[in-house]
Image 1 (cartoon, rainbow, N blue to C red):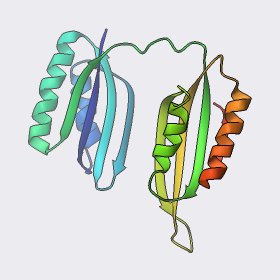
Image 2: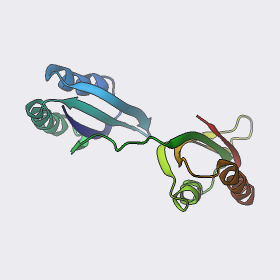
Image 3: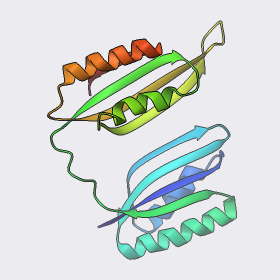
Image 4: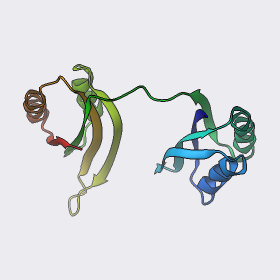
Length: 173
């Protein structure tokens, strides 16, 4: 079984997910994992597909044709299995704050400086009811090394968040 990752971005419109999933289905490829969302006026797709080498090669060709016809920006990349993550402890991090530049950079820098892998990260900025103030929210899954003292990391993270004026949650997944 071979795998590939597809990234595609195009103008948001009905039917785009159907077109991409049909390409995989017609070639008997399995969509193993995906993330799809509207960002601004664009629709963004990240998709992991698995199957035989020849069907994956054909998928790349068909994806190129679809992109040429519909104006999609795309990337097709072969990949393998993920390395073994045994011994890593999954934790969930949620942060909320008044929106301002650099929040993601500072939070990810905190975890990166400690050698902690970020497994998944999502952010959204919404307007507060009544005031219209932009409120930033971050939800992230991290993988803590098994030998790490979690209580010490939690305390250090909360001190960091207090210093940055961020409201945070840090809990086992």
